[in-house]
Amino acid sequence: GDTKVVDKGHGDGVYINTSGFGLIPDGVDINPANARPGDVVIVSGEIGTHGIAIMSVREGLEFETVIETDSAPLNGLVAEMLNVSQNIHVLRDPTRGGVASSLNEIAKASQVGIVLQERKLPVAQAVHSACELLGMDPIYVANEGKLIAIVPPDIAEPMLACMQQHPLGRRAVIIGQVTDQHPGIVVSKTGIGGTRVVDMQIGEQLPRIC
Image (cartoon, rainbow, N blue to C red; front, side, top):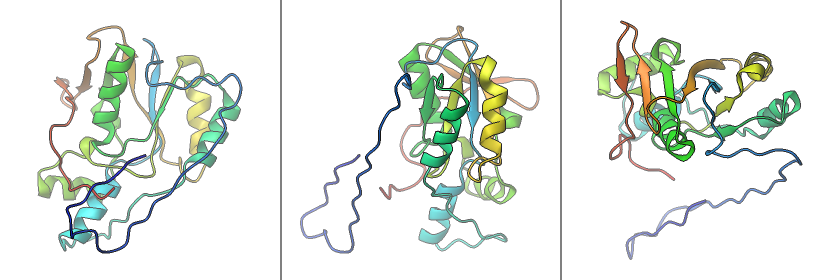
């Protein structure tokens, strides 16, 4: 959760606050420090949609295709995933800072490296075009209805199949793997065969809305 501070005299408008409660099933140990070499990285769908949707509304940008936020409750999807296996090592929602920032935090917490396959990152064509126009990288753009799952290799395929059967995971895809090389660092294999370091985001690509 977050606590917000606003300048004196600028607290006008509507402020909405929510709290979520839940139970952790016995035997479940999901933690950003649990990623292990050999684990598989899965994302539940197309990335960057929310951030571009918010920017288009705020800045009055018009694209050929209307881009809508991906905001969605993920509890149902997670429940189905836990029915497949409780041995999920890491779950994260890649909100502010996008997939790149979330994976950097996981790599540092677990002291492992993460290798992404750039061509496998799911990005809608409209979002890809908008990011090119705006000079943004979709891997750093916020999401509100997506999750990253890091799971042992032996359950990766059944977990992916389960996710793809859920309405919020139909575009789920394996995007990378955990390695014991370069601990704390995320790299991406590019489409032309090179490798680039995916750093933690510095600053904000988009103004904060929450």
